[in-house]
Image (cartoon, rainbow, N blue to C red; front, side):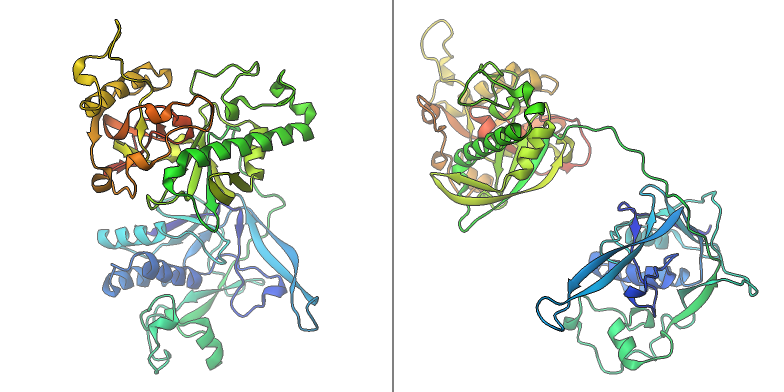
Length: 523
């Protein structure tokens, strides 16, 4: 069975300059040269699959050393021009640089096939692994998605040219007899520390600097092969626009001289909420024609986002838990490094604009921070798991009732029965939440020592547990760390309890993280 590779370019561009041509000549490499492809596979091997030995990889690459045939998608040659700093004649000196590329459809695949190549089952698995790890091809901005394809029924519109072809295209291909030789490799031992990785001493792995330095008339281990030319298309098939969906998760990176401790989670969340609402009001003032749905009767806060504020337009509190959760996160359990904003209702265009424009964060209890939006997405982007553990303390949504007709059983009255009470009140909270009823109620385990069991750097008692508002009673509520076990995998973000919209009661996956599962964790 022949070996076939399928390449698609998500950016809609393939950037590469043919060997021997200058970038400013404006000539792109098309089709992609097999010599470049094999060198890319060597780089993928050494950088992402170091466990594979030379004896395992060489037969796979050797099978692809023969000149292949291509199915080229509709394409056009295009370029952009840039004036880059030159400074040859002074600091203000600029030089014109051409950035030439081949434009293709984002979903329009390119196929490369070696009709005479045969691979054993183990070799095919190695090729699938190497090709699957490719992320770019040609220049670094030439994003690629590659896979080993089964037999395909396409027109092979670019094959080896006939001897009498009046207009062939020379393509640099590996020379099967010399690509894996070493007679032209520098005799002086190469120091692996000078390179990103240590390659085999093959002609295929010669670095460009050595080839230019030696001034060889041709590239050792490579041969020019003439192919039939394929005329550019008048149009390129564009990817069909996908229906617009509101992003539900916005993720930010925090930076500053001193990052806040994770114990200041509530303070960071409250400061971020204030900043987001401020940016949204400014957006409404700049776009009054689009701000009518956000007008409030309160003259002090004329515009307000239901998603950011958690209040209806008339000022009443929302009870559906579909408004924004501001979730500071820590990668080292010591300081807050990221912050995610999650809203089940999704973000309106104006709210997205407000989040995108947010650059700084100020709060009385923390140092000023710089913030940068690094991604917009959906809850499905979060990992799934059957076991979730506390990232911040869970704070009970109500106090213990020791008297009255609705008093709690004696075995649930803290402080002696804190583990039993927190497990009991958590299940009450979970079952009362309309947005969580599609998930099974988890088994709840109280963790007495989160420093040892979860790797926390602070005790639960050290966390700020009250909001910065008059009459807040967060410090008087029972709290602690929990482990939740679900019968099926659920997805986050997952946050429950008092002040959950401000980062308290956050849970993170533990142990069996999976790629599939129920779409859960709707807060």
